[in-house]
Amino acid sequence: PAFYNLVTNIFCKGILPEYLTGWLSPGLMVIAVTAVFFGPISGMLCAVGGDLIVRALFGSSVRFLELFTLGLYGLLIGLYYGKLHYRHDRFGMREFIDFNVIQTLVGIVCGIFIMPLGQLLLDGTDINEAIVQGTQRTIGITLMVGVILSVIMFIVSIVSSRHKSLDA
Image 1 (cartoon, rainbow, N blue to C red):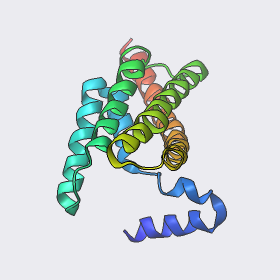
Image 2: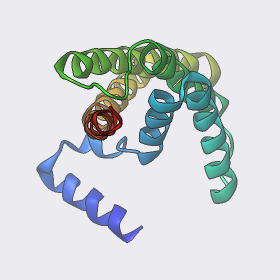
Image 3: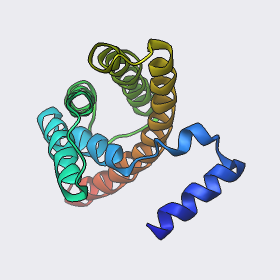
């Protein structure tokens, strides 16, 4: 908590725009890592199970729209990138671009279309406000996942290629 407050205060002082700081969630990073490395079902289960555990621990109510959207996020990233494109021994510029295009499109579908539409239908939230919040959320998540997970996949590719060359 102290580190989180420090980071939030640093970001809110003008290093990053304030609308990005609320969406820099490590939970989404865990979902994306699980989806890419272990597949779509694992990504979905990580999203749903992780959200339920966190809500049980902190005593907050379950929001089924968020639960559904997080599960869909994990499922789609795992399906389109984890199973179809990712190879552990290679991560170059093409893979970097492919991953970021896919995760941006998944973020747009989940954060800008599904979440605001669900908020409108379930809560009666103003659609303009919901789309603005969804866009802000998607920008923050896309930047965080795009940078951090790309670095993780690059490191894994270096380690995997070294192990492959030592085995040969």
